[in-house]
Amino acid sequence: MLKRIAIIPSLLVTAILFWGASCSKDDPEPRTREMEWEELDAWMKRLENEGHDIDTTDLTIFYIVRKKGDGPFPKIGDDCTISYIGFANGNKIEDSNDIHSNGKWRFVYKPPHDVAGFINAIGYMNKGSEIEMYIHSDFAFGAKGTAKVPPYTTLVYRATMHEMNPAK
Image (cartoon, rainbow, N blue to C red; front, side):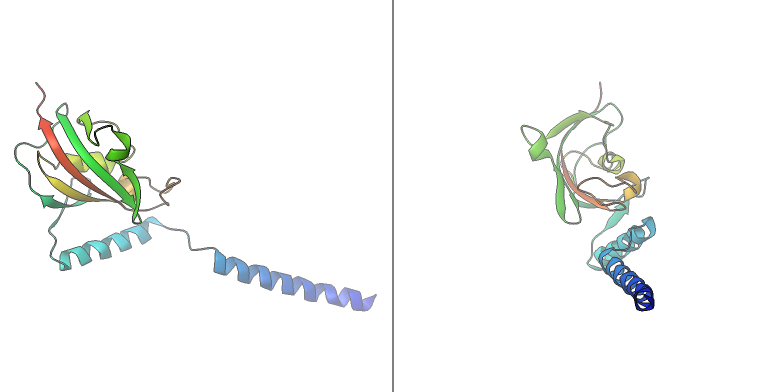
């Protein structure tokens, strides 16, 4: 009987060690806002070092103008038509070709959208412009993420403004 009682603590210690080792290897560190901003800062520095001209919106959405457009920038109530594609961690999450019959989204500026940073950056586009936006999670999916987007993930959108007509 004493031998059986002596074995129980050994089994418990062994089980705890195996459980602790398996948890520490398989469970990645949860993402934080600070981790995202460190990655985003390094990403923007790398792009600047590669010669890209990075600008920011009033909400600190980073963007690169890939092609300059002409004319005014949209104001609330203006009629806009854009095409776009959005990515998270290199994976496509949204594409105007998959959503709109002609691949272009026509809307009255400022429409509701799940990604407020996307709408904010559209305000920095004029007719014919093409931009690449880097939208931090504060103005995307935040701490909750989505089925396709992990928490605290920066989104990248590429957009082209095909038409921009001021409200009448």
